[in-house]
Length: 235
Image 1 (cartoon, helix red, strand yellow):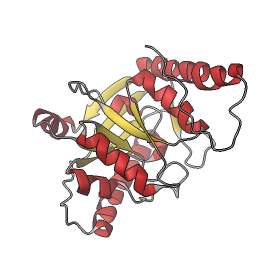
Image 2 (tube, helix red, strand yellow):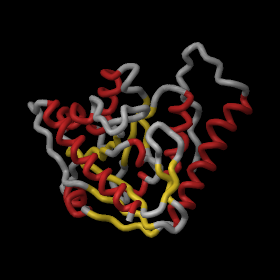
Image 3 (tube, helix red, strand yellow):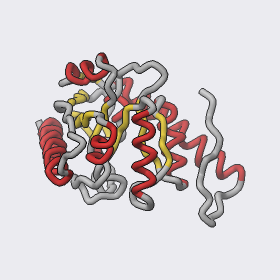
């Protein structure tokens, strides 16, 4: 795979030396992505609730995968689908962290839409809407990138309303995992762990929907999945 050029938005901050740029935004993402791929290869992966999502694909309908940030590491496993000319996209900020993230997820065939919901939510939403209308499915962490933990932020409901794409809650859970010392205690599966990718029922949000009501519904679905995932690791 050919690596893309550097797309960091310069906001008066130095990017570092050419070596630093190459190391931080090419070497580190390469090894991070392939370490995740190697770990994923050892997992015993099982899928639950795939049928309704396959029905959306057969009908050529786009969907939005919604998941809590702490389930991010193995989330590429939640998109085993094939689309002609398109796949799944995510939102990545115009920052150094965003460039590093973009370069990492590119190794999984994940397209990045640049922008940040916190700095300029309206522009980010417009870019996400354009991506879905151009044929991309979209992956969103509604509590990312820094919380509050398991609380839905604006964006996912608005995107569904504006595009007609169904929201599909999803959770990737493990029976054995380590937990990072991050704000969301992100789980990292142990090698050869059982991994279950569970999809919730697709949620069709009407164009005139009251967003607060749907926020509650999506947040509840994701939290139910999170409790199930925690139960799996405790079993």
